[in-house]
Image 1 (cartoon, rainbow, N blue to C red):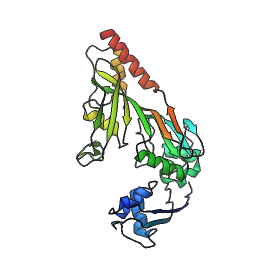
Image 2: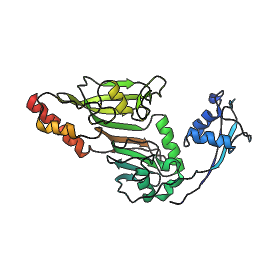
Image 3: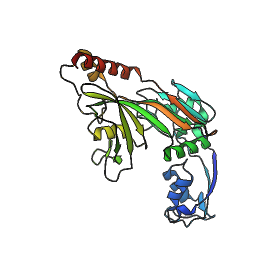
Image 4: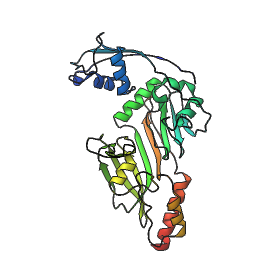
Length: 322
């Protein structure tokens, strides 16, 4: 699609509470709609100034300075608009709420330049090309299903990013995991790149803080149906945290390990477990304060058919062998 440029005209006064911090960190606090790496580029290129002067990324703030950003949105790259199906559960001038199917990558990347949610969104609303990451403020994995929100204006993008940062966005998932989870709990463990396999994430020293709350919805002979709530949104967070406590998600091709087959299980369950080729994870509820009105809004997405079938055969196996 044709490249679109939109002017960015922002300014803010550095609060005393941020005194002593580096310029790039302060800018990230004051202009959270833009990534830190993008802000660093703008500082280095001189379009983000401090009291009218160009400073370095590491310049320490004393409080009270005026930051001024006069820039243009960057090239949207080679992302192409594609007429792909979208399940839109809410739409207004500020946001879109999408119910994402399995096998859909959210954002173009190496190996996935086409056929992504971004490509579909650019066809549905070409103006999204003017926003950071085409309005996407949080992702769910390619084979995780369920709800995510997309900003349609820069103001909405700013609001949603801030809500994610202050943990006021309500994100609830359902998952089916290996093993019996005895009670409700919380995983508070930092997540970062795996120390050996850089394509994977893991619980690592020096990783970013990550907190996942889980509660038991149902237990079967060798599996558990969980509800999970995120405090943070790290890459693969639920999948990594559940594997970390030895309850990996059914079907997870990266963190799941071997198929967990209970003794004497029904044929239907055996076939379902062997054939479940994605992580059994669904973003079932999403809640946020509307960026324009401030009204709290919430949405629910029922479990997809494959997880419904999985739970049915697990329940039948429990009835037969319990």
